[in-house]
Figure 1 (tube, one colour):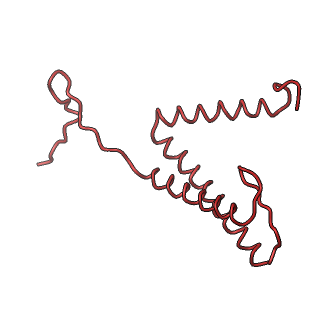
Figure 2 (cartoon, helix red, strand yellow; figure 1 turned 180 degrees about the vertical axis):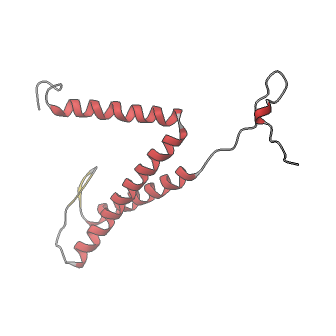
Length: 126
């Protein structure tokens, strides 16, 4: 265990990633189009990890690998945890992709001094 946690590249990399994630999250809330793009990128990455965690144990099982060990975010495990993480990543990626295509309701035009602005009124062509 290091004596000083603020030494080495790990701290600065974590600090940079934290600032980057916070900035992208704020930008996504302020501009929903950016949020949809970001969630689609995250969804594709999650789907890729999910497929990888499902296909790798299948290939190892077909090749008769004895006692395989797979790394996951919560530690090391065999076939069961690999399939579990794969199914979870695949489901989360598909759910994020579906949510990225959903849009909210269109808001009605606002009234200014009791009148609807002309720009908000749809004009019919005779």
